[in-house]
Length: 168
Image 1 (cartoon, rainbow, N blue to C red):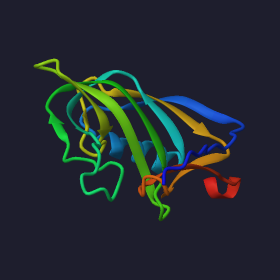
Image 2 (cartoon, one colour):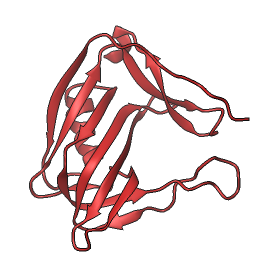
Image 3 (cartoon, rainbow, N blue to C red):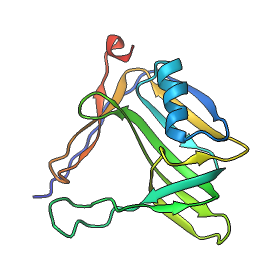
Image 4 (cartoon, one colour):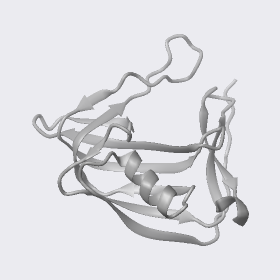
């Protein structure tokens, strides 16, 4: 049975900055290196400024024909050189506490100018020659943790209160 739900957690205080990802790196590796390893940031909201990628992969999630889930991600559409027109991501944790980066965005294929939007596989999106800029918002006291959603039967991000000790 589908249930309506509202999930919210108040955030008081945050840190905001612009992150630059150099050419040739995958987006996910750069974010892990610069945010998690260097800055010890576990939870953040990210907004990508338009920029070129050497390659990218985008997935859609059509309804699951087996009926087990509401949707099921497909194999992915692979792009060569393309423009990351827009993208927003959440850096959080999976159900086991490991880092999880989830992003939706729009890619425009360079040669045909065809566009495609959906879930971006950031481990397979390689930043182009000019690099890529990302606006990062780190919240002071909330995080995002993947938990099983009773409606979709999928693990999705839920806001969670995070103590000061847990953020370190």
